[in-house]
Every structure is written in structure tokens, then in C-alpha cells.
Image (cartoon, rainbow, N blue to C red; front, side, top):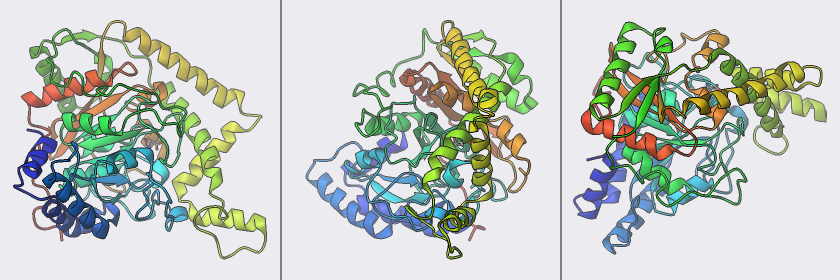
Amino acid sequence: MSILQQLRNKLDNRELSALELTQSYLKEIKYKNQALNAFISVNEAQALSIAKRADKIISDKKQALLTGLPIVHKDNLCTDVLTTTCASRILSDYKSPFNATVVEKLASQDMILLGKTNMDEFGMGSSSENSYFGSVKNPYDLSCVPGGSSGGSAAAVAAGLSPFATGSDTGGSVRQPASFCGITGMKPSYGSLSRYGLVAYGSSFDQVGVLAHYAIDCAYLLQAMAGQDEKDGTSVGTSADFFTRTIQQDLSGLSIGIDEALIADLSAKAQSLLQDCLEIYKKQGVRVKSIKLPDLKPAVSSYYILAPAEAATNLARFDGVRYGYRSKKANTLDELYINSRTEGFGREVKRRIVIGNYVLAASQYEAYYHKAQQVRSKLKQDLDQIYREVDMILLPTAATTAPKLGAQTDPVSTYLSDMYTLIANLTGAPAISFPIGMIDHLPFGAQLMSKNFKDHVLLQAVSEFQRKTNFHQPRQLLQGGWA
Ligand code: GLN
């Protein structure tokens, strides 16, 4: 039984109250977060009062699927309690007056918000080290990163500080930390969830996602968050069972494509875990076919031109006047802008703003921005061609397991490590990362990607895989020695 099903049953049978459940998670957070730094803020008072309300709703038998279940939100999703900092100094005291649409949808079922999770500043990074509030640690090995940018969410779920979490995924930020922390993480199709209230990084790439142990739980959480929203013109209407409609079905008739040449670059152990994963799928009646993916390096370049261009535009609003941090060292308006941004943004965010403004400069536009858009269109065409032959593509989520804290010093090689994830964002496609084994003592994840709006097939495929394997099951991490 999945975590969601187990908790739902216990709450509904009154074996456990929502209040007891919330208290036990808050206790875990109190002890284990000292070592992990996965939280930026904890919602103790409000969580307990919502838990009491949820218990009343359950005793009146008026509960919805998620009533009384705890969750944590990445700190770039606006919530009308706590701060919404994006892990930036510039928003370190920012309180949103409203909830993001996805937050509101979960709150409307009386889900219990335990806290807001740490991340790379504004979602820019792959390790959760670029945070004004300090690095997040990987619960499997505290000397390693949890991945990023939704590293706090991934570490919290993996370490049992919350059963579920939201994240955001602009170039891999839900999937890669899920892979490094041994859990399941899904980025749904662009447009399937509203982005209203998600602080914008790269608007044509950003999508809210979820992290949990079980794919089936991801499916039900996504379903609860989905739907067209008049406040986000890119959101689209989806059916009431868009994510869940085939979740219980077997996999006969489905096919997975694999590019062996791409896999050949990985370590022997990573290759063998991916081969084992394919064998499990073959036994379930899935047809495995060789495919040739387009060269992924131009895709990385395209992403690292377009995403900073959008970021430079989106982050122009943080000027020390309208939002957040304001420098005290300013005598003129120009100094106010310059000093507030200089002091308010971290190093990586500044790098992205500089790159973004450079590629958008009139003199450079043709050479960079325009070219990058062409690469993006070509990638979509090439992938559409592949989807004529197969339903899904299997890739590693990342080439390796979690690196050591502080090990990634060269930005370009860090950017290249996003090679397998950012193609889904460039094309708007859904993609899911799920654990397929361990390399040494660290988890390793695989990724399935499909055509846009075939999200349910991915969730079905991973759910079936998880019925036959136990890599995704929660482990006892940080037992002693962490305080
Ligand atoms: N690592 C990528 C970046 O820094 C992706 C981050 C994300 O998905 N938010 O842009």
C-alpha cells in the first residue's frame, strides 16, 4: 500500500488522528532538520490548528482524499502563511498576501502545510547549495548534496520529515533531487498545473511538480492540483482523471525507447541498473526499442541561453522598491536599485541575470536568443518523430549519484549535468524520475519521458514498476549521530 493509502486508512479508521500525525512530523522536523537544513520555515501553530479542523471533518465523514495529510511546499510557491523567500536575501522577509493556485487547491482539501522548503535561490542551481539560508544536506550522506533546486523538498520526503512535497521544475529541479534522494519526482506537462503564485524563473519552462515515495501518490497529488486557471493563461483544462486514469492498468502494449549510445557514457554500475530496469519492464510486457536521441549538448546551450534570458526579465521586478530587501547604502534612485540588487541577489543569480541581459542585447539577439529558439523547435520535432515509434523514452535522470557538498565549482560542468532533464522542459513534455537502485551507498534514479499530455502513461509505468520492486520504499535514515 502506498503512503497516501496507508495514512488515509489510518485517519479514516481513527487509528491515528491528523493532530497526532502532524505532531509526529513536527517532532521529526525539529530533530532531523538541524542536520539537513531542508526547511526555511516551519508552520507549527497553523499546522496544529488545521489538523484539529481536519479531525473534525473526518469525524463528520466529510473528508476528501487529502484531508488531514501533511505536505511541504518549496519556498518559491506563494503561501499566505510564513514567508516566501525563494531562498534569496532579496525576499528573505517577503510575506505573500495570497496562495499560489496549487497551494490553494491542496489547502481546500485541508491538507496540512508543515513548512516551506529550502532550495537554490530562485530555482537556479542543481545542488541546493545556492541558498541564502545555507546548503541542504542529503539524508543518505550528510556530506553530499541532495540535488536541486528542490533539494529541501526531496531531502524532507526522503528523511521522513513529510510524506509529500511540492517542487518546481524549470530544467530538472524536481526530478534530479528526487533521483539523488531515492524518491519519485514528477514534472507534469507544461500547462497541466497553474503557475499562478509560483515565483517566476523561466516562464516558458517552469512547472510545478511533486515529490513522494510512490508514483501513485504523485498521481493523486497532481490530480488535486491540476486544472485550468484564469490567472495563468498557459494553463489548460484537463479531465478529472487526467493523471490517474490508467494508474491500475498493466503495461502490455506499451513501448519504451532507449538510446544505448547515450547510456554507454555512464558508469558500469549505472548502466547495469538501467538494464535491470528495462528487464523488469520487458517482463511486464513492455516492448523495448532502440532509438537515436538528438545530440543533447546543443539542447543544454539552448536552455542556458533561454532560461537566463527569461530570468533576467522576470527578476527585473526585484528592485528594492516594490518588493523585499532594500539597501541602506543608497543616496540616489540608481544607487538604490544597484545596491539593493547587488546585496540582495546571490552569485549564481547575478551570473544568470548578466548572461540573460547579454543574450537579449539587440547586437547579440540573432546569435544567441534566436538560434536557441531554433534549437528548441528542432528538438521538439526530433522528439515528436521518436514518439511515432515509442510511447516513452528511458533516460538516466542524472549521470551520477549525489556529488559531495562543495564539489561543483565550475558552472559550465554543472550546467552540463542537467543534460538529461532539461529536454523535457525545452519541449514542455512530462517526465518522472524514480529510484532504480543504489550505487555504493547512494540512490540512483531513472527517468521516463513521454509526449506532451501523456502524463498518465508515465505514472502508470512507474506505478507498475513499483509494484514489482522496492527501491522506492521509505528507509530509516538519520537514525542517531545526526543531532
Ligand atoms: N539546474 C537548472 C538551472 O539551474 C534547473 C533548475 C530548475 O529546474 N529550477 O537552471
